[in-house]
Structures are given as C-alpha cells and as structure tokens.
Length: 473
Image (cartoon, rainbow, N blue to C red; front, side, top):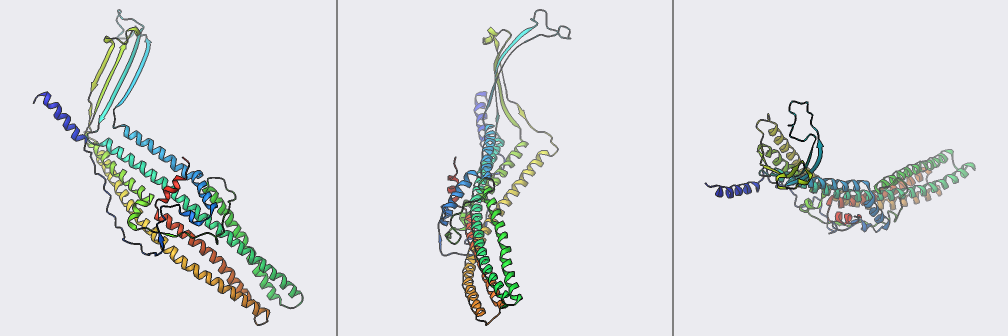
C-alpha cells in the first residue's frame, strides 16, 4: 500500500478512535417511583412554582426573606463554590485543545578556559545568545480520557449549581419556620402576661380576704403558687424569643439583634397545599439533581481510570530563531525547529491501574446508592409533610374546641366558687387547664404553619428559581 493511500486510512482510523471513549456511558438507574402519595389531599393547587411565602400575607416576612437571600453567608459561600468549580471545568476542558506557548531570552555568557572542554580559540568568549521560541503540544484523546475528565468536571459544576439551589431552598424554609416560631413565642408571651395579670389580681384579692379572715391560709398559698407559676414561665419564653431573634439574625447575614415583626400568628394566612405527583419529584428537588450529577461525575471517572491501560499519544512542535548576533536573529539561517509524536504507555505498574479502576467503580457504586437513597428520603419527606399538615390541622381544630370548653369551665368554676358551692381548688384546676390549652393551641398552630413550609420544601419546584431571581447579581 502506498503512503498516499495509507495516510487517509490512518487519519480515518484516528478519527473513529477519537469518537469513542473508554468507560461506561451514563444511564439513569431504574427508580421505583410510587404512583401516588400515601395521603391524598383533595384541596390542592399548583403553587410549587410560585413564591409561596407570599401567601402568608406578611410584608415583613417577605422583606426578611429578600434580605436573607442577598446577605446570608451560606448563600454567598455556595455561590463562590460555583465559581470555583467553573474554574475547574475550564481547566479540564482546556486539555481537549492544543496548547501553545512562547519564550524569548537574551544574554551574555563566558565559559571557563580551565575546564576539560573549553571553547575553541576561534570562538568568542564571552559570547552573546539570543532566542525567540514558539512551542505547541496536543495530546490526541484517542481513548477518551480527556473527554471523560471533562464530562466529570462538567457534572461536578452542575452538582455545585444544584447545591447552591439547595442552600437557597433551605434558607427560605428555615427563615419562614423561624419567623413562625418567633411569632408563636410572642403569642405565648402575651398569653402568659395576661394570665399573670389575672392571677396577680386574684392574689391581691385573696390577701385582703385572708387579712379579714374570710379565707384560709391554704387558699391564699394556692393562689400565690399559681401566680408564681405564671411568673416563672415568662422568663423562659423571653429566653426563647431572644435566642430565636439571634437565630433569625444569623440567617439574615448580620450580627444578633432585634428582628422586626409583622402580623401576629393569628393573622397569618395558611398557605394552600401544593399539588404534585411522585414522578415529578426527580426534576423538582435540587438535592436529587445534585446527587444525580455526582453519579454522572463518578461514572465518567471510571473511563479516566481505564484510559491509563492504553498509551497516550501527543503531538509536540517547536519553532523559533537563535543567534549570537541580535541583528541576525530573524534571518533564515537563525531558524530552529522540531516536531515529534511521543507515545507513552504503562508496562508494569504492580496493579496500580487495576486498583484505580476498582476505586473508581466503587465510588460510582456508592454514588448510585446515595442517589437512590436521596430519592427515597425525598419521597418520605413529602409523605411525612402531607401527613403532618393533615393531622396537625385536625389537632388544631380540636385544640380550639378545647379552648372554648376550658373557658366555659373556668367561668363556671369561678361562679360556683363565688357562690360558695365549691372550693378554690376547682377554680385553680379550671384556670390551669385553660392556660395550658391556650399555650398548646398556639404551639399547634405554629406546627401547622411549619408543616406547610416543610411540604413546600419537600416538594421543591420552580419556587426555588423565583427565590434565586430575588438575589442581586
């Protein structure tokens, strides 16, 4: 076969080889996706793609979320990580293209005459040396090692972007839940202070009655105990309020301090239950998409490891000019050049390459199992949130009914005591029950709000993009 016919065949063979890549191509593993959620809600709306926190109808909360998205340190750290991995992707992708460089130098050198090989007498000593060189190299990616490394770097970049969205998702939900807890503590403090004032009035009245001999010391001590019980609860609630404000301040990206309030927890509007099927969860949750990109990267790294079994072929070249006379540097006789095609291959590595491949395959297996685990956890999150909001809603209805019953009980017990039909123990029991039920009702109300926040978080969706758009670029 003539050289003219061999060159096209060789070029075609290299092109075919270069179109292939060692290692497995990524395929999404099969996932067992349930057809429906365990608990089906009837009154649902497609709200997962909207800024759901605006349904609370609290402008202060909206401003807090906007401030947090632009000042929170975790969001800024996650954004910086994207820039880091974008740089890594650029480094990996650059290896797919030829690399070129240049160098220039000029100097004057004198060689010793007292060495074994001195310069001839006809040579100048000292002498000048000037050179301008251009070099280029390109590793031919026959086995796809560089393409697999680029694929892994791109997947890592996409994973980091999904991690950023996960941070945004968590921040919005954490701030909304923390704000709800703060308003819940505020309401508990109001109830405790109202109860304290009522018990203080009762204690004052009982002291007067005791001084006049109308009641026993036992009844006075009972009233005093209830007053002191309410008094002890207030500092505990104030502690929770202060710590909750500190938590929200950190979420806002600032030092601990007071937090502005909007509507009371009784005035906040409950968000509607978002609709969605389990099959759509894989594309809506950023943590799931992040886990899949990690799997894509791990899968590509198997190809990088296997490519070490095969030789690497590079093309290198150099062109430039060298001269001892600067005025003749850019003349024809001063030219210098060379080109080569070095081939490097591993002959004996004592199992090192096999170990690297085994390591890459194990990492890919772990990433695949973690991907499936994240999906299962996501299904659980949604089911738990649906059950939580449904059952908590029923509990809240029962708690509100208990408040009405306890209020009537306390009113009737007070009437019976004032009429002399019962002891003060019955009044104490009734008022204690009313106080406990009022606090529990507020806590249940906050739990319902948090359950709906968790439901939007577990559902994921386009609302995360809406939150991203609020971040100043």
